[in-house]
Image 1: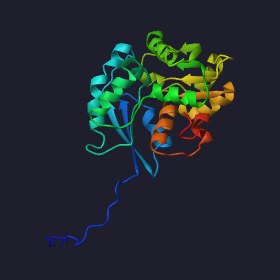
Image 2 (image 1 turned 30 degrees about the horizontal axis):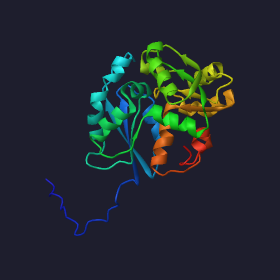
Image 3 (image 1 turned 90 degrees about the vertical axis):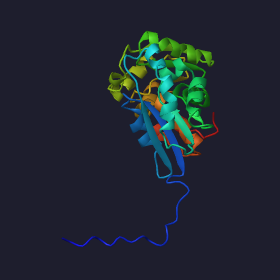
Image 4 (image 1 turned 90 degrees about the horizontal axis):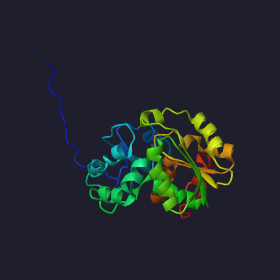
Length: 259
């Protein structure tokens, strides 16, 4: 039998950085989400910015009642993201649930676990992004049913936007929403954008719309904002990232103080 290895404790510990990465973005997503994590990995995560994910329970169909049921899980989800460490932002990545639950309620639930952290929701980030782009009249495309789309229409009207056209696709399962081809979103965008609108908003974090935004803008000849693109923009702003990235759409060319 070989003699046991001689394990020696080094006399001096190595120097430590203040953080493994300079900035930290927490991401709370649905258990069924296929899209947000890849989008944030592609557009937010870097050698400077870390993205840290917690998933919370969610059961289809996507109805206002089921969306509202996620609210009690938000505090526990936030608490699981780097416990006892500070974050630069926390994004709750569900557009329709944010509208149904309410931005202020979501902020309170997350800050119960992460006091003082800036909280990002997709609809409020989209409102800021659309305003930064100078949009006042908008068209909206959602994958939801009419029932789930109604609160969304009321939300944007309540924030002062004139909605020229609102189109929904009638899906009830967010996993199917994630399977809509980006090329189909480009085609649909050209069909549903009213000629008098300043911009198109594509609602739903399940949609693979963020990668399609530049093609959508080319097809409709005006600005387009998607849920995930808006939250990416907002989170990067909160991290002090001023990088201009036209390949991700017009919104991503705006300076952090534009809104």
